[in-house]
Length: 250
Image (cartoon, rainbow, N blue to C red; front, side, top):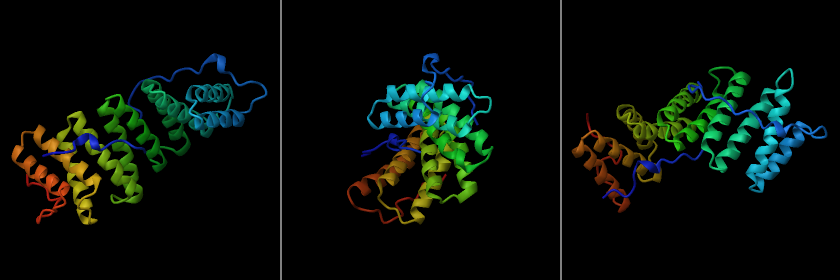
């Protein structure tokens, strides 16, 4: 009996295909003459630490308003401010606002680091998390695919960050109905965990359950039942004599 499902691969954290436009900063939130950008950041972060996300949002908007008025934009500060706004919106469960602000943070990061820089992987992954929460699975998959390519090119396919992104991408593809793409990544992830001696971790179980879901949804019931059996054996503490991560042949 299956005890988990594909949703176990939860986003935990950790190129702009949408035409969503950024919300204009609140005109009432102009930086007070006596307050510097650094002061606004400090106030925002202090308020965040107290769980006062709406108040923190106001100070981040002050930073954005102040920087937007400058002739030469402070891109690192803009990135930091938009990321802070996205974080506040996420905590306030305003996913649309979070998406808009994280897109702006990604845009600033792209200007800072240039296209193809691995530093873009984190804002891409964060944006993917929000799109996933909005059930925009294809958008989320697109961001994760870009992040994975950047990390793999920099550090290789076995890098821990690449492993994490690949597994999130496999589950996101499954949610989007892209079963073929999901299966390819699931097989890669299972093989890598087998290579590293993982026979019973929660992450392995989540991958196996996701693979079972893909097989069920593509009417490959016999193959899915083999995976379900492996999952049951792991839950009962009985590792099958055959490789637990062995996948059915196509």
